[in-house]
Length: 428
Image (tube, rainbow, N blue to C red; front, side, top):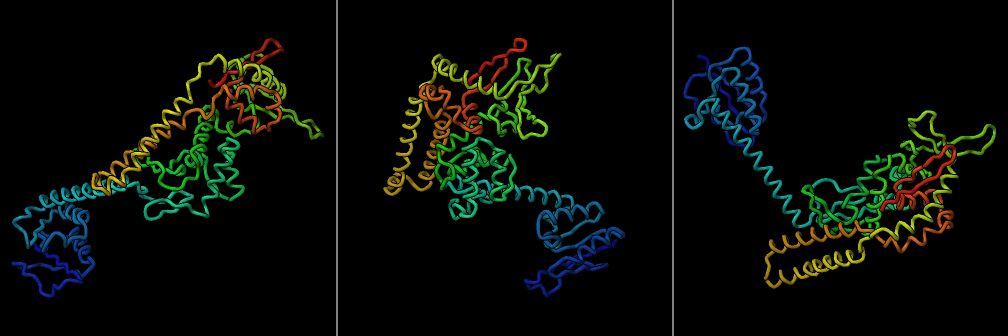
């Protein structure tokens, strides 16, 4: 019968006296601080495994439950029986010790995870920023995000460019050109929709707490960003940022979308723009149309059809809905302002007041989000203004693209031989 022992001594503990093993040993492995001899022991067991390995306690095999468990697995596979000299009767066989250790390791992991979740929940109720690095444009202070004076102007300029032109990819290119800041289109969209840049905090459970720090997007600007993103959503990504105002809106009678092509005459600088079907199924294929003619007829039709469409459309009472939502927000803000007095007079304790404040602020954030989804102005009030041809002719292509997509969902080409006309499909 071969018996070996392993003795581990902590360099900071007073362990000068050797333990009494109670039996003769074939070999003793001894470590101070680190465990190179334990690694040597495991290697020797691969070639000549002993019958028993004696240790004083399980923690001598490693500094964590996972490490101890792994080494018990190795010993069990080699057929080595482990005996702890300080608690032999209680610990049982190597297999029993292994199961017990695995159970303890799982329990420790679950308890640690629960403590982390509880800490995050307490921080969330106190409206503290979630764990992790602060978003670009902000710095992380003790209890809130603060503006980074170096990077905040970059994010602000990105938002302003998007609000002006309504083009996500165009704003991304603008950021790279002006500030040499390279971001992807998906990152740009994440900036545009992030509650953090609107002065709110968002947590992993979907809760949003309003007005926790200085925003980079005002409430009105955030509402306009959401409307622009919804408007661009049905369009192809590259079409949404195309420089021409009719891009992505025109559909041929053959159900094919139409793309804008540019033709230049040889030895001249003049260019011609045409709208051509992308995938026409007909034979012969539908002919292309001059871009200027389609644009001119679109302006004529929108000036005639838009006032009629608005007059016959049953529009919701936007002003009334706004008043109701605003009243609810003001009522909850009034309750929120009373909490410090209730806390000071002892009506509420700290925990109850903090929880009530969190609930009110999440409710306010939800109401403000609903309010932002409503149209910013009454459509009937602006129909007369945009029905003037001069209004459209005075706009640049980028500005005209912005307003076309505000009202038009699709421009349909109806052909009659070589002749054609167009129909407008409005967004309402």
